[in-house]
Length: 146
Image 1 (cartoon, rainbow, N blue to C red):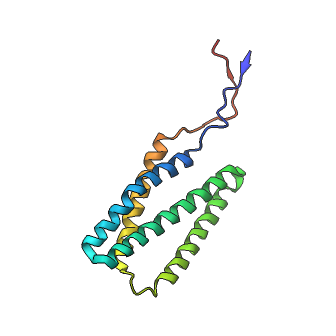
Image 2: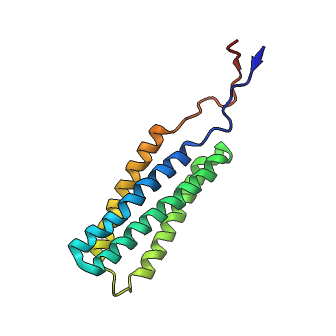
Image 3: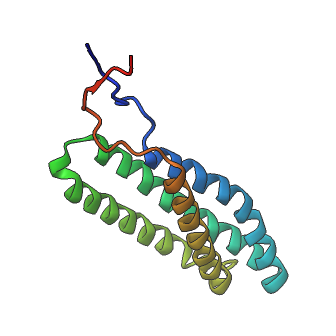
């Protein structure tokens, strides 16, 4: 007798990566804003908070887009990932065009905060990926253990 032990309903590693990165970000964003305030004053704090938030938004949108791409046809994964990346870049340029005229924006604090948050996000993704469960052969039918 054979029984299917497929984990087709198993949680995607992308979901674990997203959740872990968001947890890291929940801690890092206030710390980044505090550091920007200490180094650059009140405008630095606001700029640091906005820079970190823009980075988090950028990566959340990308992760959600990749989840949609991975759920689709495997043949379109690379092209889909490229479309997600281009969409992220277009959105980022739009945000930068809107913010470039802001008088309160401290460019150094904004950029430094975005870079630090990017590093934190990447660390969260690595940790989340290592903790995630990865299906290698989701449709394999295994023999019963009894």
